[in-house]
Each structure stands twice: as structure tokens, then as C-alpha cells.
Length: 223
Image (tube, rainbow, N blue to C red):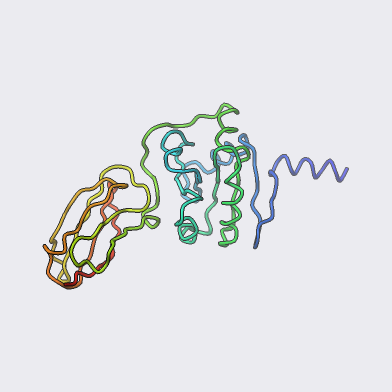
């Protein structure tokens, strides 16, 4: 009787895996669908796709956001998540998501579900996916703006490490807050900062995303 009761609990709640500092649950595609529907319209639930950005853009579970677990910024981005929300995590076929779930648990996120078999199992169970471009890609906190060499003496390169969908605007302001350069760029392609066009001193850059999110930082121009 006790074995039968445990089996029923496993079916209803999914498999619980122990991670350092806590646990996460592994659930089937059918259970994941029920979880998604039970949180529909609520802002306490997030679906996280931990595959690469190209895979996410090509095909994904609707309303998922992309946190590539192999990216250098993954751990820092997980640190910034709301620890009280409920998270459903998936990958391609279940290879990467358990590790991502374990990381999330070590960051003291309370409720994490791992989709068994990933998006492959989701599709095999007959559940829909969406393809092509989407709105939410990487959180802006995950994007890294690199300027090298810094300080800028002559010519320096500015590039964005991470994925953003659509065109991005780079604005450069002087120490007084006046706009001195405004350029559009495509993430993945670098632009050149010509130090000869700028007076020595402190400058600020402002990265403006298509959704009008802003990320800023600073750099020096020297002679």
C-alpha cells in the first residue's frame, strides 16, 4: 500500500531531484501543460529555455524567455531572477535543463520545474510551439558591452556580447550628459570608436534596445 501511494505521488508531482541547497521537480510534458495553464494570466510564472539563441528563435514554447545555460553570463543572470516566482525550465531533449535547474536551486530560487525530455517531448505529446522572431529574448542585464582597448586612445572597438533581436542604438555622451555620438548597430557586429573625434575625459555609453530598455556604462578617452 505504501509503495502504491508513493507511485501515485510520483505521477502527480513529478520526479524530485536533489540539488545543492534544495530540490527541483522533473515533470512530464502533460504536467508542464497543466502547470502553464494553471498560471495563465499571472505574473508569478516564467518559462525558461536554456538552449542557444538560434534554437530559441527557430522554435520554442510560447512565452518562453531564453537564458542560454552555456553562456558566460548565465549564472549572473540567474542571480537577478525573482526567487519567489515559479519557473519551468526546458532544453532540447532533457540534457541541459537539469543542470540549469540545479544552478537555480543553489541561487535560492524556491520553485523550479524541469521539463522531462525538453521541447522534443513537448512536441511529441502534441503540444504547440511558436517559430520565428519573438519579443522577449535575453534580459538586458545579461548583455555585455565591450570596449577595447579602454581607455580609448586612437581607435577602439565596441561590441555587444549576447543576443538582441532587432536594431540597437548606441549613444555616447560626454561627462556633462551631452550627446556626442548616436549610431545604430546590429548585435554581433562591432562598431569603431574614433578617439581622435573626442576630447580626453570621461564618457558614458547608452545601449537602447528595441523595447526601449536601456543599459549604460562608461569609458575613458585618453591621449
